[in-house]
Image 1 (tube, rainbow, N blue to C red):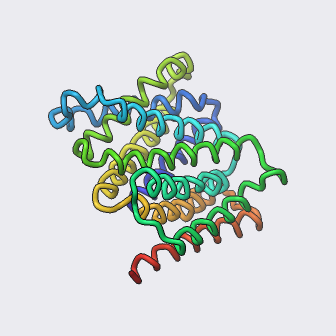
Image 2: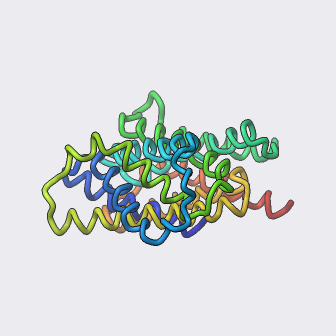
Image 3: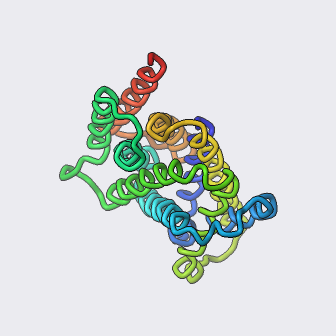
Length: 270
């Protein structure tokens, strides 16, 4: 899970470089799914159940991650990567609530309080009504999609092997985004090609690690690990773009990270 939470921001860093360079977010999102599926297909086709793509739940899960990726790349076009990931972290809260409600996973008032503290951190990053931008709105939307995706991944964890599930989300995402992504193909340069490959590999390998993790533990327990993306996102933002969050945003990020680590401590104590 920790490796996944580093690879995914790395892929999004490449995606941000693409959209800031004038590449349409919808092409960046579509190419990530299409290229990821093409790279993975030769290695997993033999383990994909014949009827996997006839299950409506597979298409729902794929639509959730497609919506999340498109939303976060749209947000990254105008917002610093650390700010986007901070707003995105409404996702673990949504995942926990949905897992308790729909999957009947255990409820804990203390865990609820810690995730509520994390939500306060999200509010400090997003600043609703006090400087919130459309880009941060897309980041929150990405978090809502991602929370649903995390829950759906746990729901379908036993439907097929991890690599087959990963292929399904890549294929579904590529199919759903193709009508918008294909007309937006940019001029292919060495830089665009390299960033497209890096974006696809980071996302694909990160999500494979995520699926492997979700097969081994409930989504409600793994949700706090998602907060470690904040460290990676802030580090990539500083190293690649030379940007650091402002004071209020840093406070929100610190609260998010503290609440996530406290939830992990709670689990370890139990």
